Length: 287
Image (cartoon, rainbow, N blue to C red):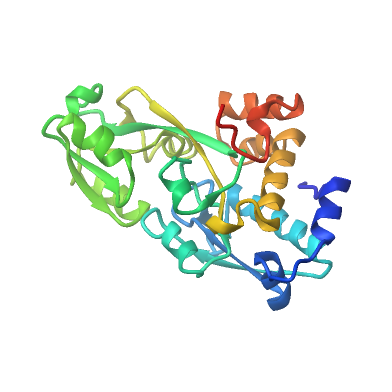
């Protein structure tokens, strides 16, 4: 079970109020926090048989709302807004959500647009899932192949087009999945973290498909608040939550709970945070 832990320093910091209202003040005033979430990225964000939003990131968000309620001293309701790769940053910029935890790779150019807090909470790499008869065997074999991808994903260009693939982009994962299974694409370029659970949890459905390229560009995932809030109370509260989830082993436990094969990155982060290493600080180190 997720636990909400606070240090004395944080409690003192969150009790201070300034003349200008910040994001946490706004959330407290309306009694609700609006969070961008994924519904197309099982098992991090998905819908169950009844249409309810569930998954690893949703468990994280539920715990974070408890922390927000404790910080402002009143119950805070949670409103979830479903986002996709192509609109999650825009929704945050436009004020449609207060924050998001939505399977986003932490890239320097993205940190110029939204406030990605430190530390990162997960990581994945890029690979191609392909049918056994596709002829795909390594990145160079993508030349001339139709490869399904998600609109707005940086690796469509860096690893798809760069290797001569014809990228067929779709808005959501369900559309890509259907196109691949229908044979409209030779392969699917995406995070390896999305392929592994499919092979584990739906072996019959994906029996003829395998990861056909080496995994490259391991990229940590970051949670985000508005750019001007990354060093504010909301950003620091989110950083503290992620640090605690690593230290307590909560994220490792959630990974196991959802049938995700253990990842070396998450195990290392858990140990690094327990040891108080720089990578688990709540601010970026430019050194």
